[in-house]
Length: 254
Image (cartoon, rainbow, N blue to C red; front, side, top):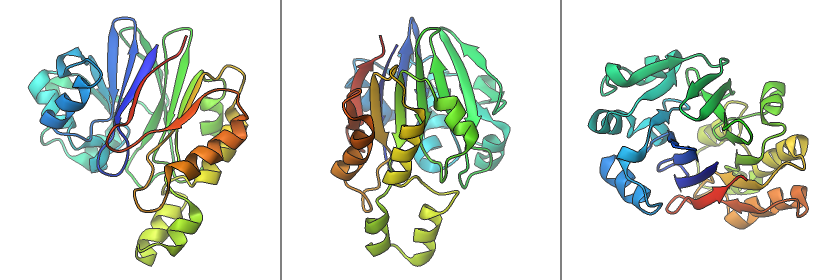
């Protein structure tokens, strides 16, 4: 199994995960032209994608889904709540499948385990993807950590974990108080030290890669997120952060 990010942040999110002959896109916050450009950096094109998993209805995650699914005939998977909140316009029914936020399902060479998360969306989920031997856990856009999240992410071989903001930068920053409260709240986004605490609870000697993702452009720095995660891992495995423009390149779970 291998995975890569096309971009991670408030201006657009998408991740490619590949196992065997199956390639999935997790979220698509980029339009057709930009998606095509970013896939090209990985040696892929839109026709190489076998399905799109959607976490929730916010535009930086779902903004390009309808256009890309319609243009390329790509099967798209989301919860009913996400569909209801996003609206059916632009989402071709022929390529849409509603998923249960607790039910495992298969797409090609993947076993997909969705799990619910606390975020200010209608029915948000995140995913653990498995090829039968390796597991990749993906967690962005959650305001707090639940026992269920810890259970799902324990024992993964790779982790992509939200490190949205640094508490001091957010507190001193230029955002209005209401937005600061939303971001820092239980249904907002993960702070660096909360992400590190989660990593401390789920890390095992199976881990091969950890990536900090969905960093705020104004309320975080890559060095701060990297330090928070690295202090927990103590050299257990490589750790890096995803950027808005470049995401991160292919990482393999072997």
